[in-house]
Amino acid sequence: MPKIPPISSEKMTKVLQKLGYVQIRQKGSHVILKKDKKLVVVPIHRGKPLKRGLVRLIIKEVGITREEFLKLLEEV
Image 1 (cartoon, rainbow, N blue to C red):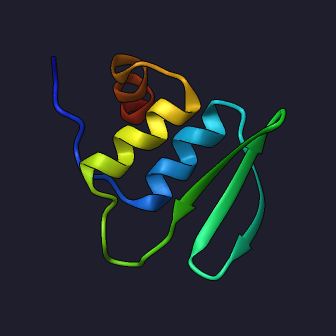
Image 2: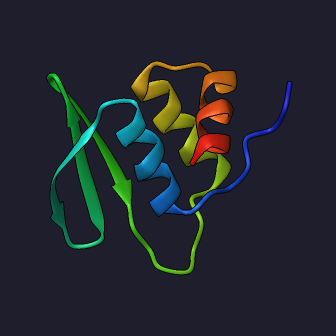
């Protein structure tokens, strides 16, 4: 099983937008995205990638598999 790489927060938001999430607001350094009644928060820290553990938590929160995420990441 391939490892999840650390990625930029911009790429993460693009992947989530491909899944149908819409940015509803940004408060400070956190972007809040929404789909139906589900909210996902992505921290935005310029120049620092999201670490693997945080990426895994977001993937779990969204409800997709690792393979689906990596496929979407290649498309972005």
